[in-house]
Length: 182
Picture (cartoon, rainbow, N blue to C red):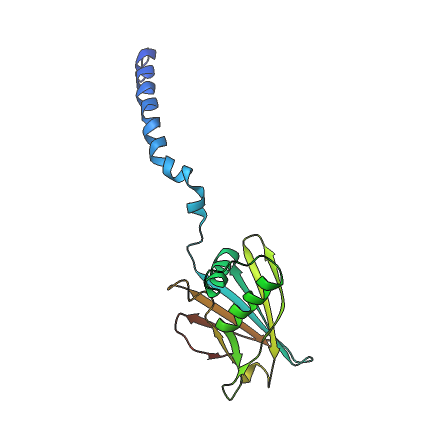
């Protein structure tokens, strides 16, 4: 046999020792493999809202992207745990929750009424649309976004406003008041 060659019996012995370590490695990985839902949970608590102005119609539209499970929990809590089935009652409760935590104020600080312009679901995300009269354009409006701040202390809500080719981003955390969009 050559200089570095080992007898077959010696290689089998090393293989046996290596194979005996596999159960230890598998045991160490088992908790992660046994609980895939925990690994999938979204650790970030955030929403993104796109606000656009339609000058021709005199409206401002906000499209809020939110995790469906978190939003459902927030709506249910706002109803004090009273369950609702999907349909008109759920839609009304969802809009009432949104209106209580998200909204616009005009230049004099008065709330601007919002109404629903639809909701759609994509996998685990909801896209919630609300509209309001623009009352002087984005430059004269303030926005407040406290969506899910009642659930999570680390909630972060980003509002991106676009008007006339200009774009502005505003960041909201728990306890923040209305902020200007311009």
